[in-house]
Length: 146
Image 1 (tube, rainbow, N blue to C red):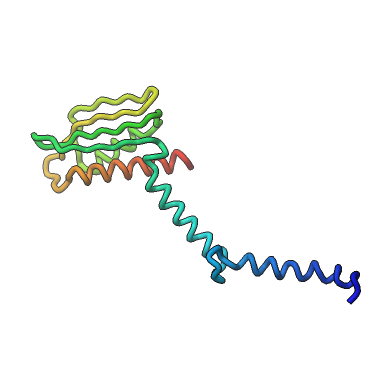
Image 2 (spheres, rainbow, N blue to C red; image 1 turned 180 degrees about the horizontal axis):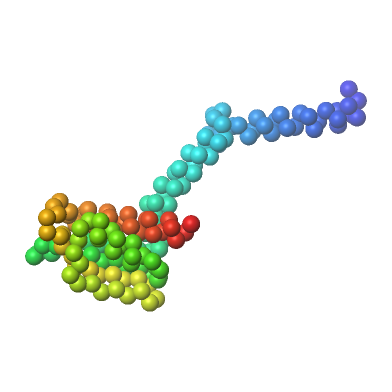
C-alpha cells in the first residue's frame, strides 16, 4: 500500500478507534458511557444533597423543651433570601404553633423559634422537626440555585 493510500484510509480507521474508547467506561468495562455518566451524576447529586448545609454553612439544632415543645435554631454565615418562608411552611406542615421567634436576615441568617404541636396533632419529635427543617433548606437551595 502506498503512502497516499494509507493517508486516505487513516481518517476512516481513526473514528472506529475513537468510537471504541467512547463506549468504554472509566472502570474498563464495556458499559455504555451514558450509563457510566448517569451513575456519576447520581453520585454527585447525592453528595450535593448531603452537603447542602455545608455549601451555605447552615447549622440546624432542635432541642426538646421541659414544658413541651421545641427550640429550633437555624444559623447561616450569609444572608439566605427566601429561606425563612420555606422554614415557616415546614412548621405549618408539621402543625407547629410558633409562640416566640427571633429572626435576623441582614448580613447572616439566624432564626431562633419556640414552638409546640397544635392541639390534636400527635407524633412530632425533635428529630422529625429537624428533618423537616433540613428538607425545607434543601428545597430552598434547589429553587435558589436553579
